[in-house]
Image 1 (tube, rainbow, N blue to C red):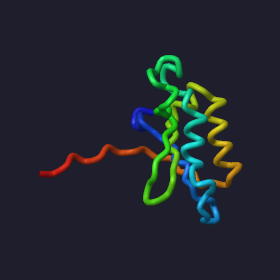
Image 2 (spheres, one colour; image 1 turned 90 degrees about the vertical axis):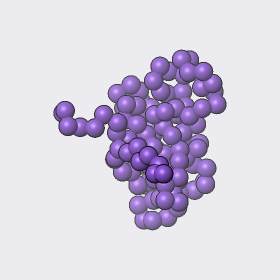
Image 3 (tube, helix red, strand yellow; image 1 turned 30 degrees about the horizontal axis):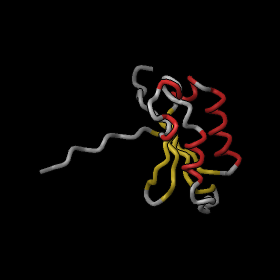
Image 4 (cartoon, one colour; image 1 turned 120 degrees about the vertical axis):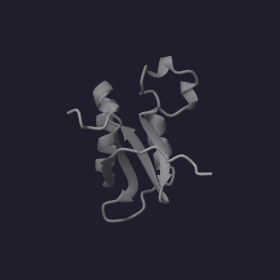
Length: 109
């Protein structure tokens, strides 16, 4: 599909379907840490990959909620890793939303 955005993400939110905050509080960093070897070029191709998150699985905070942003390229490149992340969300009853991050507008002034 030509009209489909090229940069697409899935947002795994640290909120369960019934509205509870997911614990432990560092779950997003742990999940992204497990996924750190998976990314463009593989782990061996990234300098400092032992201390960096994969660009395909990044923890962050959005509106005060822990979130892991998973790039859909992971699904094509590493289907088992994709399944692991999606099953983590499903098994823990976490809210998952598909979307696309937009770049920040340039600063005025």
